[in-house]
Image (cartoon, rainbow, N blue to C red; front, side, top):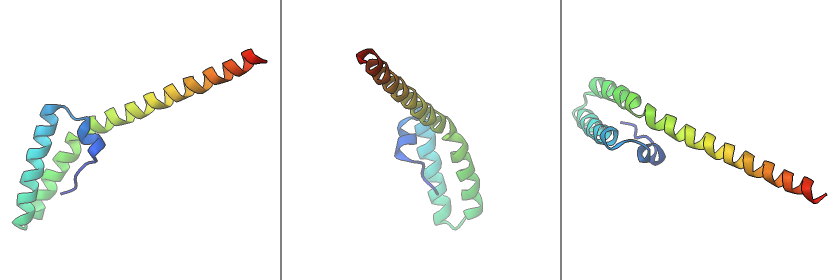
Length: 83
């Protein structure tokens, strides 16, 4: 079973995280029983479950980019005012 990143896990809701942990436990059990066919199905469910967390991480990145852009624009404005 492939884990998602710590950053994505940190952005999952409590319900999403509980479900994620349960699915990972089931998937690990299935792998230990050499039931990789069923573990694959569980992995696909995990991949769907973490999509909202991935989107939240992307939005945080876009927001950080917007804030950086605003900061750099304010520096340019200050330079223009100084001249």
